[in-house]
Amino acid sequence: MANPTARPCIVWFRDDLRLSDHPALHAASKTGAPMICLYVFDQHSRALKAPEARPPGGAARWWLAQSLRALNESLMGLGASLVLRKGPAAKVIAELARETDATTVFWNEIALTPHMAVADQITRALDEIGVGTQTFPGDLLVAPRAIRNKENRGLRVFTPFWRRVQSLGDPPKPLPAPKTLNGVADIASDRLESWKLEPSKPDWAGGLRESWTPGEASARAQLKSFLRGNVAGYTGDRDRPDRDGTSRLSPHLRFGELSPRQVWHAAHFVAAEHPRLSGGIEKFLSELGWREFCRHLLFDVPDLAMRNLQPSFDAFSWQSDSKALRAWQRGLTGYPIVDAGMRELWHTGVMHNRVRMVVASFLVKHLLIDWRHGEQWFWDTLVDADAASNPANWQWVAGSGADAAPYFRVFNPILQGEKFDPDGVYVRRWVPELKELSDKMIHQPWTATPLELASAGVTLGKDYPEPIIDHKIGRERALAAYKKTRGGL
Image (cartoon, rainbow, N blue to C red; front, side, top):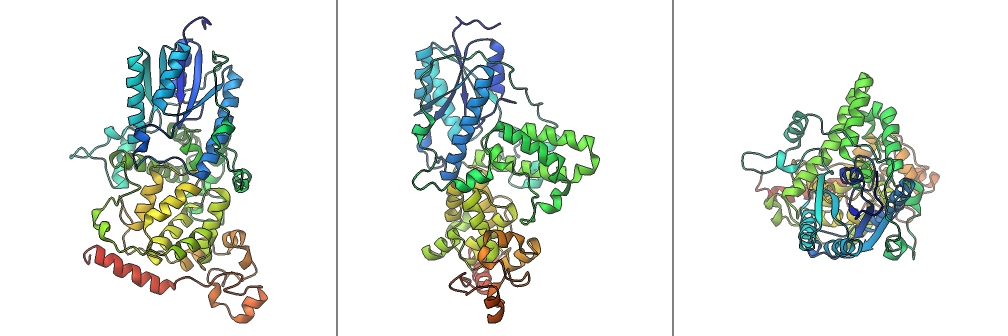
């Protein structure tokens, strides 16, 4: 039974904005002590001044605001509320502990260097004032230190990594959400609006609001819906941007509205009940494994977003072309599948996974623009911008990263469009100025005759741009540059 006169404890929420399978919240609730639920918006900690630790981009800030509101509503339903404080986490948490005479601070670990550095600062600050700490693993299936090679380094090829993860068996079962919480009233809290996470002048988030409902309830509903429906065709449909074939779980995982082990156990449960779905579920879980792989990689290489994992790429002759970069960012390259992807990103805060590879390849290979420019753009515009997956995926495409695609793999944006958007559904949605073109011409409108263009109401160079680079020329230029970089290999 809760003791209202007992000294309180603090649960520090981080990238784990949920009540279910929240080990720190679960442990704190079991103590029966009055509980203060805290979120700290920290862009000031000494550790966060490290170049590898970036504040969230614009789209992620929007999602964070919605997710915090949803978490607060869930907490209020159980008898608590979310206290919001801004500033260096160690200073904020120590001050709150002194202010409330708290005995212990609970939190879930995040196995990334900047987050671990902040946690160490907090532990030291609380030790100085006699406040205890309890921490729990919570953001991964397997701790990075559990999967090492003979040189005590993480694995850099995905397939053996994923086999090792699977060989360790099931992760612990998810913990239930508390039924009630013994909250502490009247704790000073910032107004969420004062943090200015959401855009106002201009308000460019209309497409995000139209596309998403952040929060734990939405995340769990989406997981359930996916495992009951789209997972059946996931193996093939996940590559089709013209179909609703993906899980749409990435931003929910990014903000911890779902935990990886919730996804793991839910997927295995469905596979056991419906063996016919096992193929799609196995492929889906391998994508969860790729997220894990990227996290383990970032654990070893915290500056992954800034330097080539393979040093041979340090001498690569990237081109400085602000005009081409801007055309790529705006979805005005003249290649419909590329432009559709970039416009989908701007409107919805996500881009279909297959198209992400195509647009990334186009930037770093056709245009020879440094992958870091693309990674930074995605960081600001993706609602699921993840500190590990974003740079790891960009380096994979560029050929400079772990388990990288061969440098000579230059995606042909025309063939990619024709193969994965054969009826032009995806392009017509996001590049509507081309919607009247035939399926045959929609992925290469510059090959249409003047009559065909006129019939479709398209004037190239006016309604839609000519290609900013010829595919064949771009491919040959990329191969020459890569051959030089890789020593002729």
